[in-house]
Length: 119
Image (cartoon, rainbow, N blue to C red; front, side, top):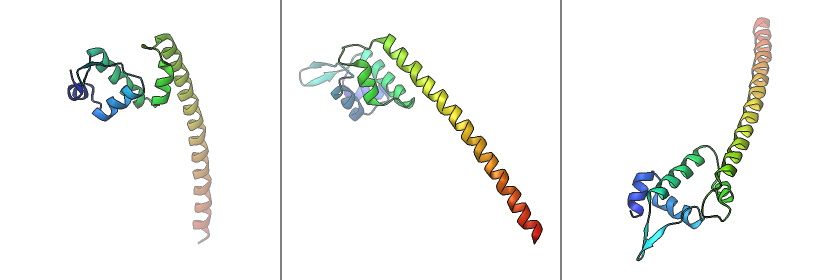
């Protein structure tokens, strides 16, 4: 299939698909001057898009491929484990921040009530 159909099936723009190819994330065959995309290419494009929705940068995906034709899925799994740990750490930090904000709001409420009662 050509890029238009690949775009429709994968949900990625034609520009994004060309970018993935230029970064070495896709190996696409050619028929004359046209790129021909396989079902494997479509699945890989979908995976790249999904990874981006998880906050994974294209540069990180490129590093995971590291010049190989295929991904080392054990390395990808380990990378995702690290990302998950990062997210869990961020969640803990945000929970601490939320508690600090709550306490700060409560102390402001006390101050406002004190000012209101003086009037």
